[in-house]
Length: 184
Image (cartoon, rainbow, N blue to C red):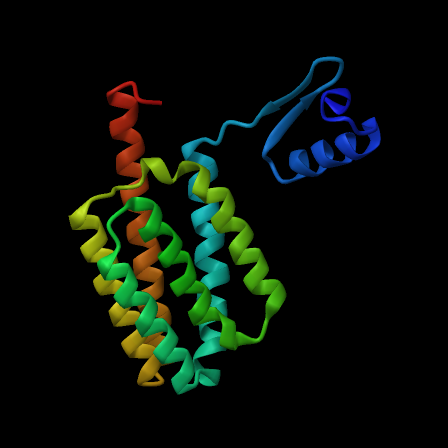
């Protein structure tokens, strides 16, 4: 691989080692590297991590939120409502959540959340999509934002927890359906 891209073996080895530590590749001695296959168990574990990290981030963020944070979040929700593709919904969803957590002033926590979301993105094709799932998620986002605007930290966190748990149920159902249909 190093020769093919015209670099020394050391940076390639370091990059592959890092990818392995992140669970993205499997290194086999004397055989090379292969892309790691994420299981539904991996995805559920990542949703559990999201639940813990994002609820804590929102708990820390709500007391620090300003009107500019609410305005930005509302603009993202308006764009989300107008989005036409699953990719746009996904990008705007991540931006909305990041907007909510930024006032926590915990850059490492937010970076961990983003890392988990990035890993989860590999399996988003299994997530329930379409107008029904989009509409439910959009309304949940509105409810979370309204709780934040009212200063209701506990309510906002409870709504976020419910939102992530619903996603977990959808993914499990989609995964079971994909297995029955031999999609995965």
